[in-house]
Image (cartoon, rainbow, N blue to C red; front, top):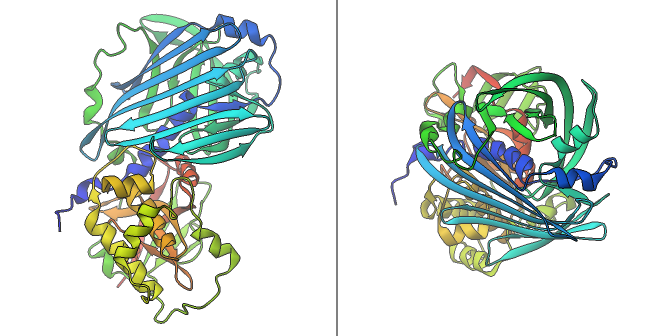
Length: 487
């Protein structure tokens, strides 16, 4: 068995949650909630090229290039992002590109979205057809099809701040937008509020700006716009910000932020050290700093008056293999665009791991153990894709989780992904694992080869990968105090 680098398998979800928000700002499509006036005039005012620098506090970690061109009967929008980020000591070089064609009223006709981080890639493309957004997503070699119903034809590329500016929001007034996020392939809601005007400094010049703040699932992002509605500066969670710059200065100093480890920044200190977490039968924790408890209550977790109790689960001794699954459970046997449980490659690999006469718990244990032993533990910045993980044989907790779910479903065991926090060396890190159904839901973690997972796995969310963006609202806010440990 290869040596496992335990220090690099945690915290990726926190980083993905933030950058999902960044993508919402840079690579999103928003549905028009109310008509804007003089749309063509707004379009002609836009500069053909804009450069932004991305910072973590005062250290530059990335560059954004935006281009917008009038083609006569259509408009062409292109945005490129280049970033260097530190994930548990590994420097990830990431490139993201969104290319879109717009109608004359600035509504979306079609788009392409590409995320590349080394051996992992995520691609999406789509077009508006009537009241539907037709989508294809996955790897370049294999893309799944899906559809999203639209109440209106969506706008593209930075529109919610621009739209708030053009609609003449009064100070302290709020407007809501529905936005499509290509990184999770889902529609989300976002609120934008006009704040009092502020004077900021850009490239040594003091400028009076209109300030707008967007609330997305409890996370706040703010933008400062000049008198023409052009975004000069933005700030978000974890000390992330963007500032307008020039092409000549865009790449100057890039890479200075490589020592900033996002997984450490997002982690939560523990008030006590936990020894032999796998031997604990239960743990009691005081939780504070969040208004929405997400999915803290249910199953092995009990949450009352800010006190969370997590109890170790028991594996069913003799599950009834002939029992009919409830319809609300059987749905978790179905494949999804990024959990391809029906793919021949996944089905073939599962058949090599399990035997037809194995009990469900034996099948689950064999699958979790195989993933633990055969998937290299390596931090990855990408959209988790089970088939790609099986082919590349590497990935972080997200990749382990989606592959676990795909293989378990292929073996006839309902499964979902879960995300939350897990304890390691004095801190709680954001992490992902799976939950499977054996006469009841049972947590399991292929990163640790734990079946069931230990009680320091604190579930915050359960569902498809697109649901995990809900974590963004608690990052940097949640605090934990361990009250009791039961052995």
